[in-house]
Amino acid sequence: MRIVDYENNRNLNDVGIFLNVEEVAELCAYLQRLAQIPDLQHIHLSEISGPSLEREITVSIDHKR
Image 1 (cartoon, one colour):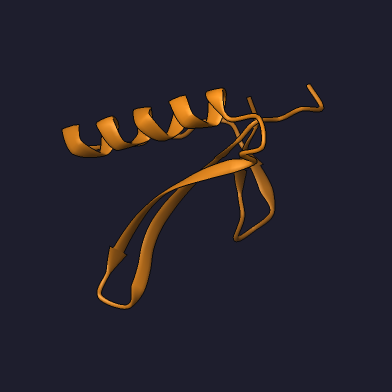
Image 2 (tube, one colour):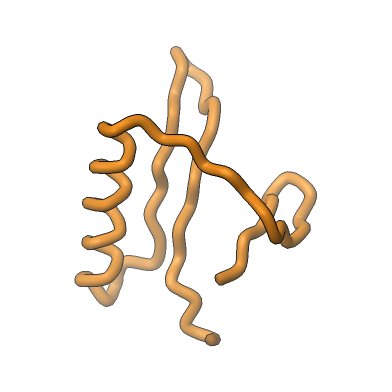
């Protein structure tokens, strides 16, 4: 597992992610698709407020590992 802060292009070792029940279900569905569809490169779980992206989690399969 590798966790990266895109803004600073640095690895993170310790993170907390707090999701509500609906977000957990959405992330689970996205992860299942990522595991089942070989051509799918990554998934995004995003929180949008009006026209702005507030937060986003991107999950990719690391084929190098």
